[in-house]
Length: 154
Image (cartoon, rainbow, N blue to C red; front, side):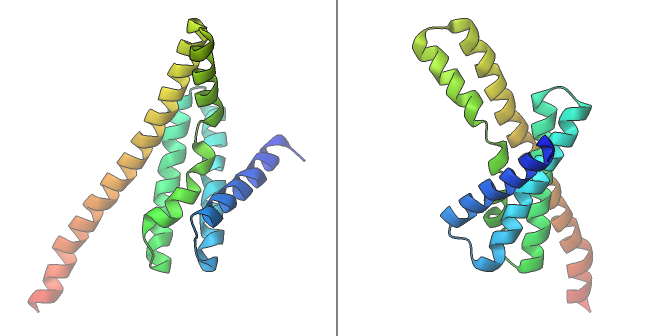
């Protein structure tokens, strides 16, 4: 089995584990876990195209946020319920661990290197989420202005 398929399977299982921790209902477990697969798949594809961490996490978190918004409307649930499980594969656990480990041991050069990588992960995740949620908010407002008011006035 290729490394990418193993990563996708483990992203499903990791997202499933956190979905269970967050007490998602049975019908939402699969959606949250598949969100993790789509999120990590987007990260893997973007990583092959761009060598940087920031763009890859930005695109992957945007995919996770869009996935959560779309499927939240389908199953009539809050988007954060699906999103929290879907974003789990992007959390920079090893980078954060090594950042803290190197600062404690006094290795400043390695601390800076891992610290910058961790910050790029965080900025990519928050930027992707912000872009999608802002666009989704504006689209809902535009929809409400043009379609809800016409129906109400008739």
